[in-house]
Structure formats: structure tokens, C-alpha cells
Image (cartoon, rainbow, N blue to C red; front, side, top):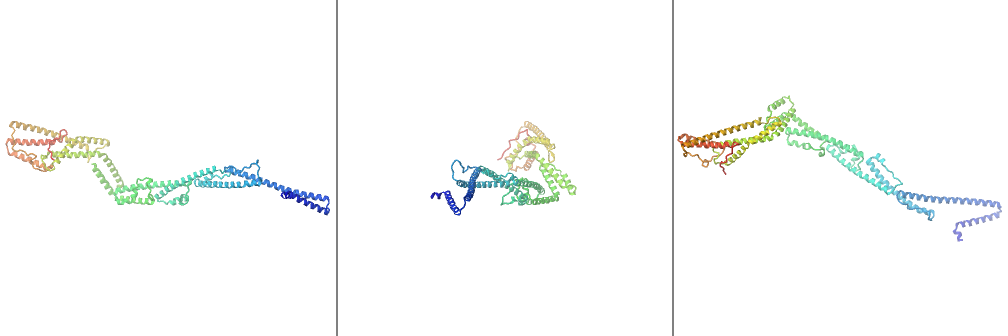
Length: 582
């Protein structure tokens, strides 16, 4: 009985047998024939076979469907693992005994679902990276060019290697974007600086280029077109800046010339200090706002126009001032200016027959020429000044040597003696000084092709005249020395003939002389008075001894003259027996 309950097929056979037995009893009772019974049993058997066949077919179909599901799941699982670069988590082995198909399917489905989830996550990672790559590519290269570089997600290749490759590509694009953004920021700073200097609206300039560039909070365009537009705008503004710089510097130059021409006060010049300070500035040095704005340039132009109008009204005064400047330069450099010609020009300006600007330009050229010539004459003029100073010292020394009381003790005598010693040393150098000056003047005239003049007189003729005068003085000194020698011989013969007797009137020694000032004119007058008194005494007495005394005094005077004249000669040595005073 228990076996019957456990086996559904046996239970089914028992049920069918009891029903057939019941059917047989009904037929026996009814009296159904055997033929009818066989026919009914046959029909019943066919109907049962048909039901069994339909159920078997359904069971086969369900089994085949389960196997197909298992195969599809395994294939999908293998595909996902292959796409993700991983080994399959489930491999069916036919040689091993497995459970039912449903159990096998229940084992595969969770693993398949897990791999699907992982594939979905991996695919989202790919999509996220590629979306970032596409976005940055659009920003850098633009939509059209970046569309050519677009890479769709490939379902069969979702490996970590490819994902890492996409990450590297994204990192490269992010780095390039960062560099481009910095580049754009630098260009925007340059553009802002240029617009500030030129007095333009920076925001309006950005809106004309790319509205996104003016958005301080949003992202700025880093595309090639945006950078090229920035470069073009910066280049254009730089050209405008250079043009305005040149114009402003020309105006500043003209302003300085007019200021110098009209001696404009410093207070008035201070108003345009920011203009003149940039007269030689480079492009990168001009960064102050509105320095090159059109309003400021018009303002400077108006000032230059005003100065030019003032210059036109004061042109005669300017010409006269330049003439005075030219004459002063000529005076300092000992050149002769053409005063009569300039006077004629001034008269022509007053009559209106000559353009004052042309006259002023000619005078400016003449001043430049005189300054250039003065520079070339500087060295020679310095030597001429030294030579003229030496001539003054020579003249003073001659007067000093003619002073009879030059050795008398007095206030300042030691200073005069020191000056005399320096003058003698300077006079001894004069021949070499004249020779050097002559050589310089000849070389200068040979180089320039014109005559070197000093206050309108030829320097060489001055030097030649001085040499001639010096030779004449030298001849006069020789004649005086010969005369003194002859007088000395006469005195010696008189002493030999009449004998030497003491003189009754002995001249005073320098120590016993009255202490008079040692100045040139006072000493000379005093010496002259002493000589006249001595000569008057010699006329009052007719004795021989008095005549001898007069001859001695005269000889002493000639000795003093000989000492003075010999100091002027470069051939004779200066006397060193002069008394010195502390």
C-alpha cells in the first residue's frame, strides 16, 4: 500500500483498472456487445495516447528550453567575462554528473546576474570617461573636429587596460585644457592691459570676440578659435598702441623743443610730466591707464598746437634769443659771429619777407655748427688761455725786474718774490708752449681746411708775432749787455788811471731802506725818486770821487737791469741771489 502511494504511476494504473472494471460491470448489466466494447476501449486507448503524447511533448519542450537557457546563460557569461578581460566564473563540464537542469540553471543565473551588474558598472565607467573626453575635446577642438575623434563604447571590449588607456587620454586632455586655460588667462591679462592703456572698454572687447571669455564665474572657452581670436585682437591692439606711442612721443619731442625754445616755466611743464617722461619708453614700459587714450592724445595735441601758436607770435623774440645764444657761444669760443647778416635777417622778418621758422632753423643749424667747431677747438683754446696767462706773467715779471726797490723789505714782499720765482719758471717754459701750440694749430687747420682764429685774428700770426717780438727783445738784451760791458771797461780804465777812492755818499742798503709797500707802481715811483735825488747830488759836486760814485750807482742799475732781462731769455739762467724773507 505504501508503495502504491509513493509511486504515482502505480496509483494511476490502479485507478484506471478500477474504472475499467466498473465500466465492464456496467456493460454486463446493460448487455453491450463485444464489438461495441472493443470499439469503445480502442477509442479510450487512443484518447489516452493522445493525452500522453501531448504531455510528453510539452515535457520535451520544457527540457529543451531549460537546456537552451543554460547554454545561453553560459554563453552570455563567457562573453561578459571575455569583454571584461576576466576568466569565466562557471564552466560546464559534461563528463561530470550534474544535478537537474533546473538546479544547474539556478546555479548559473546568480553568477550571470552578478556579471551583468559588473558589466553595467564597467560600461558606465567607460561612458563617464568618454563623456569627459568628448566634452574636453569639444572645448579644445570644437564640435566638428572632435566628432571625428569620437570613440563609442565597444561592448566587447570593456577591459581594465582599455579603461586605463581612456583615463590616460583624459588626463592628457585635462592637462592640455589646463595649459590652454592658463594661456587664455595670460592673453586676457595682456588684452586687459592694452585696453586699459588705450582707454578702451575691456568687457566690450571680450563680447566682440567671445561672450564666454567675459564670464568671470563660468568656464572660459579654450578652443583654437578663441585663442586665435585673442591673438588677433592682441596683435591689432599692439599695432594701435605702437602707432599711438609714436604719435605721443613725436608730440612730446615737439613739446620739449618748444619748451626749450620759449623757456617755458617749470611749473607749466610739470602738467605734462607724464608725457615727456615716456619720450623714450618702450612698448612694455607704458602701462599706466589711459596713457594712450585718444582723449589724452587730443589733449596733448591741443597743447602742442597752443605752443606752436605762441611760437609763431614770439618768433622774432626767439630769433633774437637764438642770435644772443649764438653770439655768446662765439664769445666763449673766441669766434667771430656774422652779426650784420643776422641783423639783416631780423629786418627781413619784421618786414614779413622771410619765414621766421626757416630763419630759426638756419640759426639752429649755425649754432650746431659752431658748437661742433667749438668742441674741436676746445683743446687748442685751453692751451691758448695758458699761453696768454703766461704772457701776462711775463709782462708782470718785466715790470717787476724794472722796479729798483723790489728787494726792499716790506709787507707782502715774500709773496711777490714767490710769484716772481713761479713767473720765471713759467716764462722759461714758454718756447716749448709756443711750439706745441703751433703744431696743434697747424694740424687743426690741415684737418679742417680752414684757418684757426682767435677773436678774428689768426692764431699762427699771433704766435709768429710773439716770436718776432721775443727775438727783438732778445736782440735788445744782447745790445744792453754789450753796452754794460763797454761801460764796465770805461769804469775800470778810470779807476786804473785815477785810483779807487771811497765814495762820500754811500747808497743805503736794503736793510736800512725805509719800509715801503712792495707793490709794483709804488715801488717803481719810489725807486725813480731816489735815482733822481742821487743824480741831483752828483751835479752839485764836481769832485772826482763823486763822479766815481755816480758811475758805481749807474753800474749797479745796469746790473739790476741785466738780472731782469736775463730772466726773460730761455738761453740764460734766472738769478738765484735774490734775498728771501720769511
